[in-house]
Image (tube, rainbow, N blue to C red; front, side, top):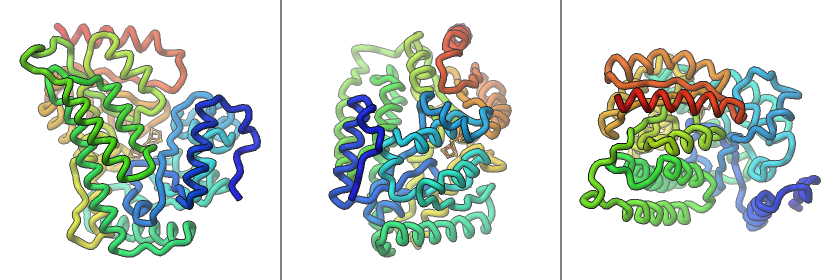
Length: 383
Ligand code: BJ8
């Protein structure tokens, strides 16, 4: 028998509604699997007939609770996510039947050990580098183990055919997400970067695949209809690319702010961005091999080396006609902070463009300082 959290009555209306909506899905028999990272092979969860949902926390409010257990000098994404889990304030975590996680950064993988006290967590062992036959081989084995975990926890059997069907479905969604991102290539951009990234993020909370496909296609048609090149001509607004850590929790502070200051965010070079969507999973080969090869190509800073991120960055700067690159790094994210040295070189030396590095967290305390720095960055682009 499903029950709501003990503190349910204290929640605001929107949150209450989310809890009730997911409870209804669960009562109808749909299982829910929580995920934290772009490396998670969503196709396996789809093949199990379950819903998936991102559990990455983007709120400052749960950080104090997390800090009673986790160190203060940890990335806000990890603290916020864990805080949601231990305060029963996230409907997605509360109703998750299982969590499929992976060994990315040290903070996340150790946090998962604690999370395992609250929900069944399976940690997939992600290789530390992308190249070489052993990397793909071990990641393929991790896929098989993840499938076995899902079967056990969800009480289902996952067949090869079901995985192949899920790969096809997810490829269709990848193409739709890519189409939406690529609207940013148009000049003038008919849609703000804030809107594009919000649409993509909310697609992770759309539970039925069919609904998601339909919604994304409708959204794309709606956005593209706004483009009227002949009437408007080229936009004088600087075209910005954002790279670095996931933007959950800092979207308003960064994307909204820079656009309100007269720039257009036209491209996103982060883990869920266009370059992840443009690589489709091979539909013909062994599905475990296909998933392993595809997901291992994600250019996250947790990989060493991660040189392909730089070549992707160069290509995207050209394709999206970018005037300046803004790198957003969450406090205490060592891998992105160190890798920013390479990104700065790529942007300034290879492409000859202005580059700004912003380190931030989920608080509003640095908004004034960030606004001043963004202002100087935009001035530099206009010169
Ligand atoms: S594929 S970016 S979702 S690992 S920001 S928690 S790395 S300390 S989120 Fe990430 Fe997967 Fe990579 Fe994407 Fe750690 Fe850095 Fe925090 Fe991070």
